[in-house]
Length: 166
Image (spheres, helix red, strand yellow):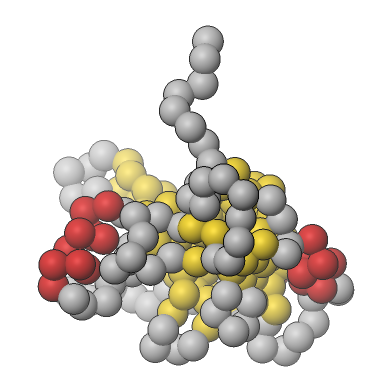
């Protein structure tokens, strides 16, 4: 039995919602995922991430960079591409194919100046590209801009060190 196709969600309805974004190498754009609730086969509730849409550029706030370590190790061992690294945060704006967003994307572009990247064969996680004083590893940032050229820029990268003290 096949599942009925899910109607795409207008990306404008996701502004302010927590989303997960990854680079879609096949389509040459960013894929935006939203978290949705579902019922597992055993009847218990669960959550999963589903692609809500695609955009040429994405602006996020409260960004956390995630890398699935088991999938990263599989990519290194098999030398095969697999989606396993994401930027998760509140969706601020998208540079959609029609280019109408009210100027929010352009304002976010002015905030973000530090380039961040990820290479599964060289890095364990996201790192600052170029000169940076101190530890180049990045875990979170206040704002991030994922542009149409496939590059990620943040306002100020933060390296989270250990558990918070109580």
